[in-house]
Image 1 (cartoon, helix red, strand yellow):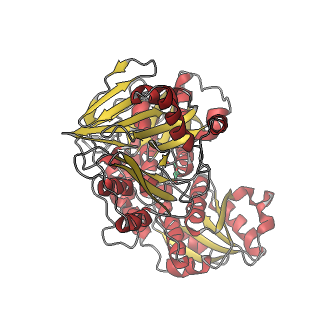
Image 2 (tube, protein in one colour; image 1 turned 90 degrees about the vertical axis):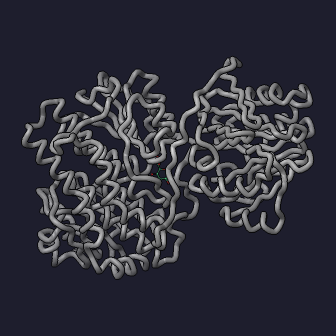
Image 3 (tube, helix red, strand yellow; image 1 turned 120 degrees about the vertical axis):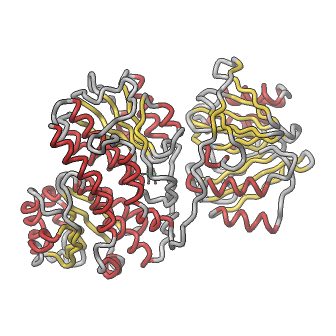
Length: 600
Ligand code: G6P
């Protein structure tokens, strides 16, 4: 940040907006009378803020960072900014050739303070400045030697009022207003500071001064990157709830309704897709790629697209898909699912697929994010800002987008009569009301959660689309309770995991009373016969049929089988949430996690 006013307080405010990217440690550096001064603290940004209150920093040029540890633990020494006497930097990404550079620089006398890969950048710029004192040239020469992914902002002691920036694979944006200049690793950090934003492209290196930026592309040519209005996600608050996660779970009837509404035509009985820019959703084959919760949404979408639209679908985790050399589905299309639109693995997989000629559609929550801008076409979700690290409302919104896509694809592939489409659209329109009932379905949830909090391991089971839902439920549970949880397809139980069942094991079964219920009931009997304690999430008919084997039952309203997986997500989220609360875990920022992971 460059201003005529001191910048440190606004730097810390900006870091708070970026805390979803990491909260292991944080720091800021400013230029005070030609000297680099730093404040860094392990822990959350509140720790840095406290330190800064005691020992404030002056200075009108400054940089800041909140870290998610990759190389080196979350200590003060490893916290950014990293600095030499005359250069301070902040870095997102991973410098893959950092070992070789470190050895080379250390041999020339550089003294390293941290275990990070990032620190080499500061030393490299210092070394280049010795060879060529012009900051922009020295910076570009240093950047040219880096391999890996990075978004870098550097500040030079002798050059107040100047920030040097570079982007390769990790997002970075510039905003200019009056005689101030701001750089952020995404738009949300810059909200409230400016109205326009400039996104850098991969390979760009830039020089930022008050009210002015000069950008060179990877060939060194001066380029103009267009200014766009800064999309405001708006102010975020817990609205009186104990946690963002709870607020976000409760918001789902509204967020799913909003997401569906944008895909329903004016008459209200047909699905209408936006312009898909050449992505043929009538194709025979598709792949669905994402990470974490977004991947599980995709796996539920697979059941819909195969079962309703007759499209042969393959789903994969982005990091595996990227490197496993799978041939692209000829004539097919790709669906890339991401809440943030910035997940490095998903972005890399998307670029890889595009490189092979696959037309791709992004299901993304954050407009103008990198995946949003990179994909050929996009289906927005309307979850609004999701702050809790454990994804809830983004997941159900992703399911809504996938469900609407399924109906549109099925129609295009002539798999759906007009009547059938009307039934599916009606189910979609009614789903938010069912979801609302499901959220408040069981008054026993607190007692069930208290019991779950005493266990060391929980198994989640489901069949059909409830299998990926069980995977998502187990992910939600383990990430915020720190209790081991895993999910299996119910039919797979007998092939191994049944060995784990004893009287201490809790088994959460997600199974509405559908055509597969009897088979799942047999699996429940196998569990009960071995003393396992079952918590069944079903409807009234399912709960009645399993009353002799389930220790606890959560009865959800009857709903259309098409949209039921969306409705059944809610109690699974609530169980994870309430168990974490009863254990006293920091639900919104559980240990070791980051909401958006921009390294591969
Ligand atoms: C991180 C988050 C998960 C999320 C995943 C994918 O691991 O902790 O909650 O599901 O990234 O994020 P995306 O923004 O691409 O949906």
